Length: 237
Image: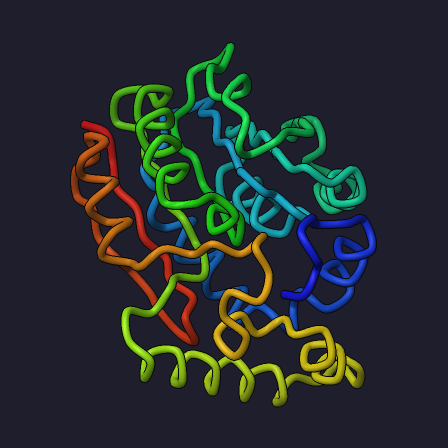
């Protein structure tokens, strides 16, 4: 999306307003991630990197009533919204403001049984993603898992064309009266405007699957894909 070089609190407000229209099949993505992290031990800890408005965290809090979810995000606006979203599950939801590219947060004071992330990892370059996967593998408890929902970089021009068209059509079909206008005028469709904004640095799906394997993850796979958005990850034996 067209943000210059940084994500601003105004961007956060726009995404809170339009996220359900902009993210393809958001509810389905949340259900898939919830299935993938199963089974979890009792009293498990799940870290949601880039928790945003807290919809994925809320889904996991409902699905796993003995689990504590830690929502990490760089935006105070998003963390405030995520806290409100957690509702009656607030006693099992913790928030922390963080910088994804920093490394100080990657050592946890509690056992981590799953790490999930939606629409965040693409802000790191290739080397940054590789290091993140290695650090998260080390941080996970045995049997833990990492599952990511994110935009991925197509390997061919036709891949860009298909992803751009699918995403554009999806948003156009949503019900919010201003969503499509905002989506187009602010250049949210990365695949229509690749490399326009340096904040977006998606990597190809094959590369990321390889980096997960190199980090030590097993059962690495891609589980869902539409409009250049994919869900992928693996588990730590």
